[in-house]
Length: 284
Image (cartoon, rainbow, N blue to C red):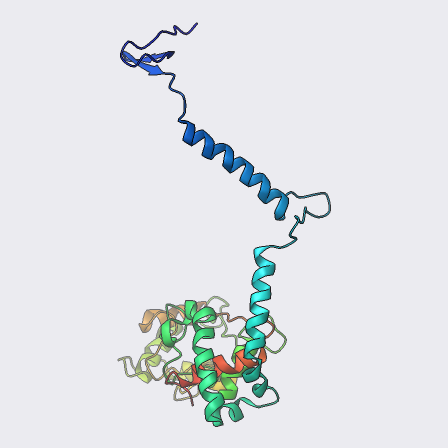
């Protein structure tokens, strides 16, 4: 049994617990604390009544007000869309080139596109299209699929290897992993690619390059945008730079994925962000 006794200093009963000569006092909670605690319980019950709370077998308790933060947000966004309709309606039926040619619409598109880019594209492509590891820079003139307004809009609409029926798709074969060439051949090709990009190298792998790579990347390594085949003669690398990175791609290549934004963004928003990307410095 716990040995309850009165503390001689405070006059408060002890709980009977003692550790290393230290006795625990049975001090009651402050009244203000208990008042706040019980008020919080009552407040919580009020929330359960007013707002959606308890789940049921097939639904949930909707609450007296029958509203949620999600529904309130949807109403606010609908109000915002309605306030913008005076401008967004002007985009309807216009090609992206027509929007870019209209100074008023262009200014509106740039302002909106900057925000849309920051919300949806910046996590991968970096601030102002500066790029990130394994994600392309959008502020230079090095394009896999072309940098015209129409090209950019097409990519934003349907993505790259996104699974959409109209997505852009390019596949580089795993030449070494699939035993199409040897590791020694890959080393020679990479050495020649280094030369094409002005980064040293030699002509040792030229014949192998012409046989296995030139059909997509062109004999001079200039790439073929219609195929999404990158340039190899500019020293710009999406994945690991240098000869080691080239060998890795020849052996077992990485293939990036960009989501399709059609259905996620409206047609007007896609035009806006496409125009903004085109303006970053690399548009053709």
